[in-house]
Image 1 (cartoon, rainbow, N blue to C red):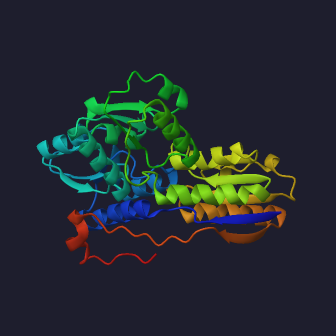
Image 2: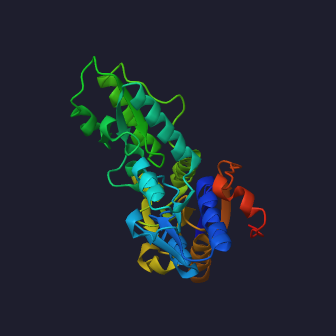
Length: 317
């Protein structure tokens, strides 16, 4: 067996920032620190912080008045910020800057009188937060068929935005269909799909060409991890999305396969290495790291923590 270890993989800059933010908030403020929704969509990360005293909530009203509340990397709607302020919560905003960029675009288009078509997945935390920036302006689509059903006409003032963790190919198809139906539609000057999502998809696309199986480390509610597995399957490759080595099924292997291993942007490297060790121990697998792109993006801590964090010794990577 041969393992092709995809790079880049795993944590992106936004996830690193969100995790460091919660770590720092716990050290500075003690526990409990409340978090609105999961800090990132990964079971291992969430379980770790639960053990350390974080409390994840789905309603701001469940946070006792005056406590620390951290907004997750996926971003929140203005109503969440308003209720937080009314309850005198000490809010810390760990929204990924790339999601904040989409929020600002939404506000700009809504103020200018545009109807906004958001390409994304219904119910995803990021989509809820983005549509909450201007609820009356948005229409959500996630397929070309839904584009064909849109009720707009040639005189409507239209703009589109995308969820940051979509499949690049799927988003491109939907955007192209939007432009065909509505030549007047406008979009952001730069692609909203984040650099990390694109890079990880590119690595899977390239490496799966010579592979028999693709294993994606990530949780089932992680959109970008789901897209990696779908991309491999679209290339005709058997692909499995798992949280860790305990979910590997020996029935997937004969023992002489080429296996690509990658990880979604919210999956820790430790689970990748556990899977590599599992395959090495059982099949004598060799490992070859394949770097498709280098990533050097870094996001600083939220402004609420930057000054105070200087007095706290941060862990080394």
